[in-house]
Length: 511
Image 1 (cartoon, helix red, strand yellow):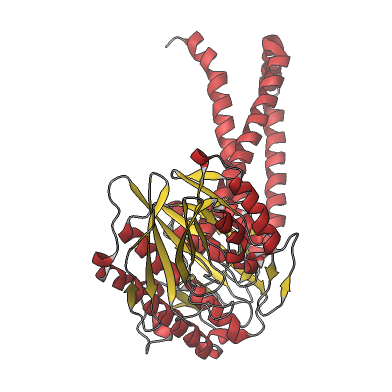
Image 2 (cartoon, rainbow, N blue to C red; image 1 turned 180 degrees about the horizontal axis):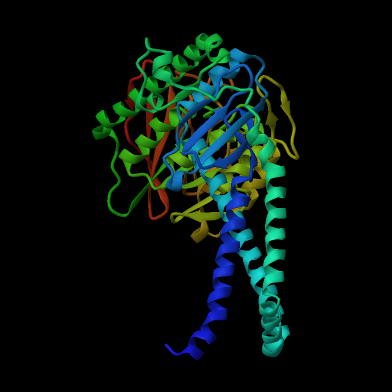
């Protein structure tokens, strides 16, 4: 390559190198100093990335810190500073955390998304800074021109000794500045003993831990020693939940031969309702959907108990367990407040809002419940009553032409589909809310078949609470089979309180 060619390429190579060095430096510095406040499980928390290869949970002054290998590329780790919660007491908090931790996939996926977003944001910021520096340098370089640059070069070389002395002075000044900032902290002896990490298995040798817990380490110290009993209780709750719901999941495969299998050209949807924060049941429900070959999840609401922002872990779990399925959903009266619907949308759910939509060739209509009900509190009226909602949805359904007839209406309270059913403007109308199965009930209106059906509580909820290491009542899911977008059959699969699984008979729907 000729010298002229090298001179032509050199500026571009220098600018490229400058861009890369600036972008990487700014991006990495921004990433390691970044943090994000999020809701994890039942807590507010601050998440910040590290490069120690561990996911470390700081649980406050009373409980010990925990860590486990993050198993991420480039040794990226994460610190999770667990903060406030709305739990009334320590026992309630620990039980709640242990039960959520027994099904952590949804929360893990959420944290991964947060860290990935921080990485992307800082990479973009680094690239922007690098581009700005390159533009500034290139602009100055161009404005100076070749003649002025040559003059400056000759000036530098003619005063080489002076420049060298000045460079030394500048370098010494920089070193003094850096030492004044970082040096004192490094020179002082640390007052705190470095953290000693102990495997959880050694702290609780009497317990037989599962593979996930075997990788957990606990920070040794006073809080750990004094809180062994508290930790043991949390671990026992975790393991009881894991064992019970794991047994349910395994038993689904044993009864798989009794679950109706869709024929070619048919589509299966899985209907859930009234989970009320019981994310443990999601393993069972997902396995039922897998065995049946479901392509769609229909969520009839009340995924939470009070609709609080911390309860979005229930939606995160649903998305993670059914990540390969499309989801059509409405919010129930215990989901009101906006947090749960927002989380549904962020997780890619199709949230019905009184407009007909088509998913997997099935025409849906529905809306979230207008009433707001907290955990143990009375109903608070919304913008309309269920009776008014029922009449309004019926008007929308009955306006549809015959070739756009509503295949499935999804609401939370069966009172909200009463008018549509009476007027015969939808083929299948499903709901939850009652915590018991009602139907399927068939009738013919103006020569058109209509079936109404209320799913029992999927979470095994007693009242509005279901989070626990076992079921309070049987947990029910329903498989709906469709052909050409029309419902043709229903079948229930039930998780029993004793850990057994019951499969109902396949019930064809009238055509």
